[in-house]
Image 1: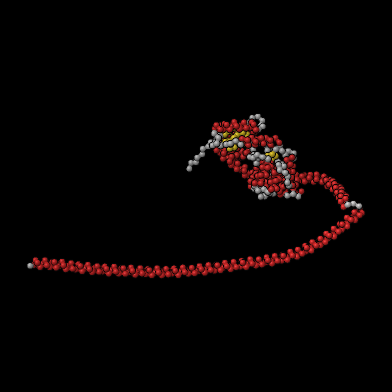
Image 2: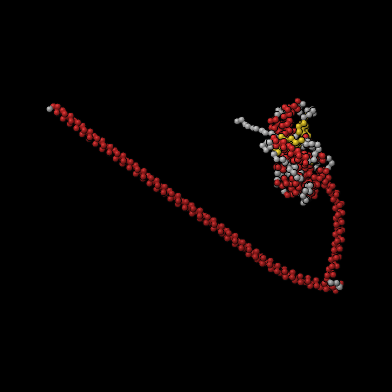
Length: 520
């Protein structure tokens, strides 16, 4: 019985415990449900607040957009109204101008009507006077026929014959008197003009030869110039196109070449090499390139000095450079730049005396021989070459014509052209101005170089040894070794058939290939 009570009490305890657990679980669940409901209510409240805020924002934006649209509409309306007012003012102005034009036309029409009436009145008066003249003419004819018993045709022929005889006699007397006056004055005046121009224009002339001498400090330097097995001399001659003569002449080396520009480049380069002391093929090439730029700068300065001396301005830079190049050009032994300056002064002074255009005459006189700076590179008369070059560089027609006509390659058309030709003749014909032999020699060497340059694949050509050798540098990518031999043979045959020359000419074809890379 006791055991049964224990069991029952234990089961009752368990049941009470289970009931208590269930009650706790129900309470806890209800609390959680209430918490969830409160959270849901809070979330719903926040969403509602946010929605209200968004609605307020949208309303504000809508009001702002409406305000902006209204302002834009007002602005466009104001702009359109202003444009309409502007258009209306322009229309009114045009209408006012048309009214003024109509008034002017009305006035002109009235003036034309008045003039037309005056013209009609004048015509009537003229017709009346013409009728009176005709009546008087008929009366005179009748009177003449009555007095002379001649017909009008006979009287007219007699009168015309007498008038022709008198005019012919007067014309002959006037022509004889004019010719006598011209003969008395022209020689004296021309001599005065030319003499005064020559006296006021004392331009120095310098004769050029075909050699330049470079002084060296000692004979030991000659060996360094020649180099190992002559490599320095060969490199120097190939790059400059001149002959470098190293002989027994004490403390001097001779540079020989017919082209004065090449010879000057070679002289400047050799002087720099001698003063520096470092002489080898790479250095030679570098110094020659620098000397070439230095000579080109001197040429430009010489052209600018010539412009300053003659008072000319506005000359194309290429023309200035070509004028300076004439410093190293001779014509029959006469320096061409000095000759051109002399012609410019002579032509300008004569133009001042005869009332021609002084500036035109001086400009054409300075430029008249610029073709001689081109005829080493081009073929044709130097007057026409110079005219074409000046025309392409913007010179006006008068200058171009005077250049082209100074040797009468084209007909003379202006007094300035005659004056340039006269100045050229005066400068060239004075005693000692020119030497024919040197010019012929230079022309022969020029023709030799041009003939060799005409072959395909030739890069540069130099006539050396006073024309006894022509050195040809070819493009290695177009001429191979066998082609170089064929080219030398063909060139020699062409020289034999086309040129006249003393002795023999050696043709040397040089083909050089270089491989260059840079270490970085």
